[in-house]
Image (cartoon, rainbow, N blue to C red; front, side, top):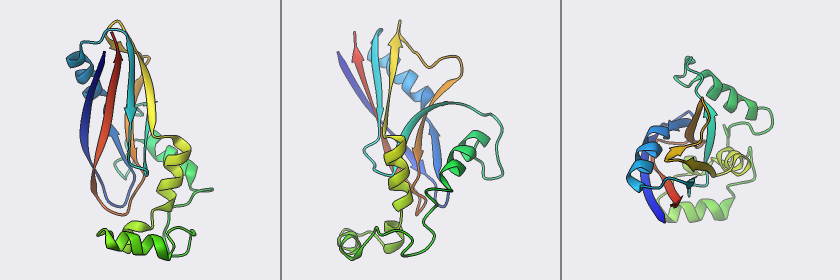
Amino acid sequence: MVYRETLTVRSNDGIPTFHNVTAAAKEALQRSGIQNGILSVYSHHTTCSVITQEAAFDLSMTGLETLQVDFIEAFSSFLPACRKEGMYLHPGPKALAFAAEHGEDARGCHNTDAHLRSALVGRSENIAIIDGQLDLGEYGYIYFVDFDTTRARTRQVQLTFLGE
């Protein structure tokens, strides 16, 4: 059996956004009726990732959990946030022209760090379903991470349940 749902989330401007989609995934699992199988959580957005991680509980001054800040900061030495034009080769003149033709502004195109982070982290996670429960361990949560900080935007999280 295959069951699909799409979640809609709203990401922030200026800081990576971590969406805890665990509760929504558990509710969708109950609607699916699947008892044993796999949940695939996927992002078709090329600047977003899906991870499983524990909640840190403590919040930083940015509003992110401390472990989420550590996760973002770990990238800063080898994939710094794009802060000025020319910092990365992308976007070039053709990419900027293409974006302008499709209503994207130049600032929104300077998100190369988000593309690279997403490519390294990955855009999906598979979670086992055992006896009608997501096998996340005692402290596991599912996070949809939007690395793109160029503007606030609406994103979709794809949930696909496979099983019986």
